[in-house]
Length: 162
Image 1 (spheres, rainbow, N blue to C red):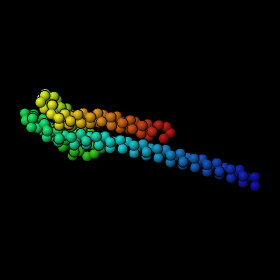
Image 2: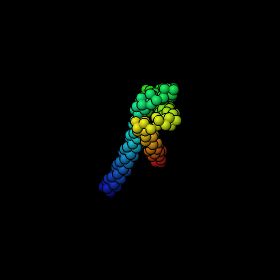
Image 3: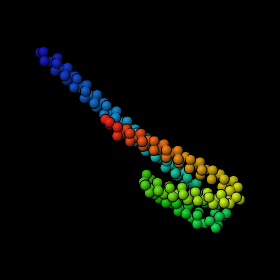
Image 4: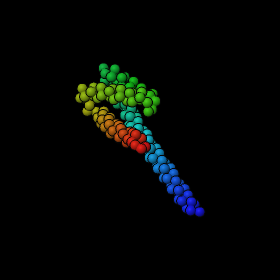
């Protein structure tokens, strides 16, 4: 009979340890899942801003094309870069590379616009270039946020004892 209370106490302690371990494991797993979802959501935001920029390109091309007949090659490069971005699969290295090419092409078009004062003074061109500049800033912000989310996630996954 003396062994029964000790045995019950041992079973209770083992049960408490198992319950605590299971609870801890579930909490850690849920935290990692939330961090992964945060990373995915932030990348979706980056993609959204990339798409906004890509959507502005046809408007900029249409407005500037009439003025820039001799710069048609630059505009065609911009359209090809946008098309490559649109065709690249989401969340792929090809998509990021296409976004970088689009960024370079936009830079070239903005440089051309700077060389044409009468074009620069057009309200529509000014509005579109302002929107593109704002979008470039948003891309930088969203990329920074994404990188921070990835850093947090990687820290969570890699730190001991997780």
